Image (cartoon, rainbow, N blue to C red; front, side, top):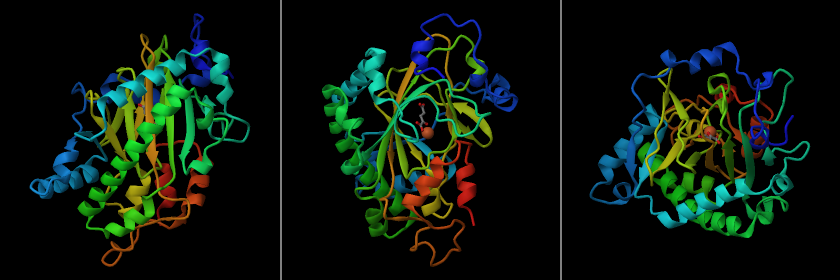
Length: 345
Ligand SMILES: O=C(O)CCC(=O)C(=O)O
Ligand SMILES: [Fe+2]
């Protein structure tokens, strides 16, 4: 397989290699009639300042709760993260993909590992490969950073990422807290679970494709996370969500973060919150670059329905140590929300 799809598309492509061509079912769901006719999904908009303000809190918590139960995704404004930091980060990520291939390949995924730079990890022979190069790495705890990945990034990218990570840690903590409040969960429970939890990020480069309808940028999946904060780096759209069985494109507002509810939160809320199934499509004109930051619980924590909710409810999900949950997740191929079914009792 190519070391980098970004490099492959620099030469004319006469025929898309078969391993990138999605199967019939996925192709049908790419066709226009299966995609919502409304131009783009208006995903709910939440305002972090109003969520924290005593005057507006009650109504905003209600909105957050209904958003997380009915959508599992929202855009967040007034999130407190400095715009110039976000702009700097976008610039640094674009610069990373302008590096010569051999520089990027220093971070190549090593055999048997899931972290690093490269294409979809193959777990079965007939598996389809997404039209993308991705770079996944664990960022927290700091001791879990692989020495040849984060610590070895070009210094301007690394420093900017470090600043962004620290801002997003504060933000994610605040988001988890208001989510717990809206669920009427014991606040200490989420705090203990997610404080200084396992965090990782994925930068993805989707090259243009001469026949974009035939391929998938990123296979449909829900994130295995607590929450994911998604950033569109070069302003190119392509993100879609599955809402009420129909795929809908999502337009990102400039300056807003897109926040996804992940599987851990669906499990923790005992099914009240819903993780959102999503995918990425590509186009024939321009590359698309994104960065997702994943916020999870601690490795030592257990993933399972919240004890404070189980006083009145029966658990619908099993409990699993986070360490095991992560192992099981990476042992399977991405496939819609199937990992959650695996966690169901
Ligand atoms: O690139 C995107 O638009 C989506 C990325 C994503 O869903 C992921 O990395 O899990
Ligand atoms: Fe995702």
